Length: 482
Image (cartoon, rainbow, N blue to C red):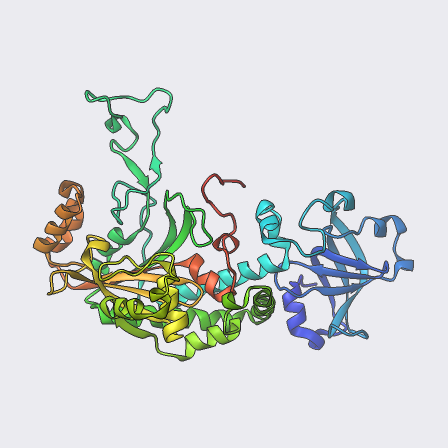
């Protein structure tokens, strides 16, 4: 007898009527001592188990409660009631794990609506809620689609280091990695920590990006991508920031900025389309949740589009492309800016755009995804290619409604003399970058790449409002629970 997942059984429907199956899962509800709603995490839908209580031991039935786990052997039949096409007539029931109803009352497993904050407090249990299980299945689908897309495009998947001695962003907001005794740190002659005594013989950190290593790999493999955890020691308690998150970072030899933008747009459309096709029930549930949530917001904060309409709009429209200079002109002339409605006023060229500016361009002005490019060199990283004007770089950001920046990338600086100037300007020690500089010394080529934050992508596709709700165990300031 085959053990089917509940998803498999429901998809087969009446075609397996009268077959005997074994299903296992957790009880979502037990009504009238007769109807068990069972869920195993494979789908948002439950399967109904019908119990002839006269044929089962009363003591066994008393132990069947919400959150208990069961193994049921029974026969598939067409359902006589509304709400489901088929159901299982139970022949045997085995209780795998009990759940005390009194103890359940204090948890999110209690069958009622719980706040997202409550779910975060019990992150170890939230996988068994409809909302979080749906998000995780969509997240899984997006991750698979990302790998599938790059495989189809001829990319090589490269695992870049999590422990690194370099700061790819030049931001300095990194978590240190050490094996030194923190209560007895070795000091050098200047009284500073002597990292030569550390495990790696130097100061190391958790990576903020696999990009620099990815560039090195692309200089021999042509097209590569990395996909792994990255870390920022940024003390930001916002709905858009995490201390630990997952990044997708392709690097392509012989690509210019236009080719880079084309690839990023194509990737986003591909993976969103995949999730919609492969998670229809979860997406319908999340779409209904999104629309209901919008009705509870003030009118000026509501999305003009439903979740499905927003996703369809991204899929069916070319992204608007404009320079940073053009964007600044639009923002400065906007009534929003002139009436002082921006928290951070746009005062002129050189302004570092904030999320509110990005969302204004996407949601109010163009009402479509936007790719900004050619940013001021002063506000971008050292590795971005300097334009002929000497003041802008070949950077690009993709902006999405409700999210702001979802992709950041650039054509990389392939000219050694210009790269060395940038390294000096940014105060980076050239000797620490010898290996990176070598890629410009031995057969340098134009190349490009970008970074896509997985959690921001999941945030957009699921319609959730807080990035802590789209990752299994969020890591944020003062919070490393679970």
